[in-house]
Image 1 (cartoon, rainbow, N blue to C red):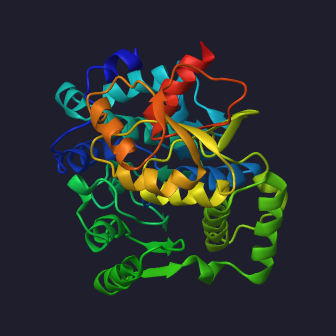
Image 2 (tube, rainbow, N blue to C red; image 1 turned 30 degrees about the vertical axis):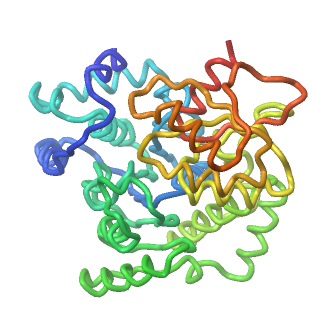
Length: 381
């Protein structure tokens, strides 16, 4: 039902109408009951930061939702509430109810992500807190139309240049303009992001600070304990820190036990003795993976969209790569195989075509949600 409806909508657009979502939301907002929303923006780490925070809030007794995207195996992964993904029955019930609030013209016109975002907020009306994760943007993202009590900003880096801008300063401004009340920034790889944040804080007369303002020495010790217990790589420890900064901002006491089993699937997830999967797809993600896995060697199962800087990504990962196996992905945005093979030759990386998993090899599957999805589909079969 919902699946058939969403299948009529393209997943990606060359041009986005940024006026559509605010207009549709304005037409139905009187009929929506909004929880306390924590908006999550940035380039890398939104999913894991959101899941750390949402899981902790739920563990602490709050009715909590976490909206994330895209999904790996099934759509239901996008709408998590009270400890698990929404059921297909509840999802379709909410879809039918939402259609009664929207005009036929608006329901047809909304993009895949816009409709999904409205649907999630509709599902979450009885929650105490909702962590609402932006898609690729910030200021003009579909998630930005809803009032929120806090914006969390994960590391900002170059990505989606066609929509966000071709410099860190432009991308940071587009993302950080989404902050409307109070903003907390994670550790940033580029000083330009901090400079833009200061400018926006002055322009909007709002408070934007770094997570250090909300992380005490006691918090730091707890974070180290949680990271050790859950075997978290450094970049996930940083995401955990931002989630804890949010709890401190909300003045909600927590303990280490509130973060057990909070890690989001698909982020350096070891799915068997010799397979690690990660849905990262940009240079910042590649750097984090290298730092987490250095001194090891892997067969990299990989592919990339044409607009990603795959040459730089492969260069970063090269010290941990024994061989690159290109996996078949059915998407017109994927780079041509000949072009990818030429790049691998230029980088002096041994390569071939992925045909299956060998027990004698250690595999790292990386290159975006769609690459991991393609791998899991074949692996599970």
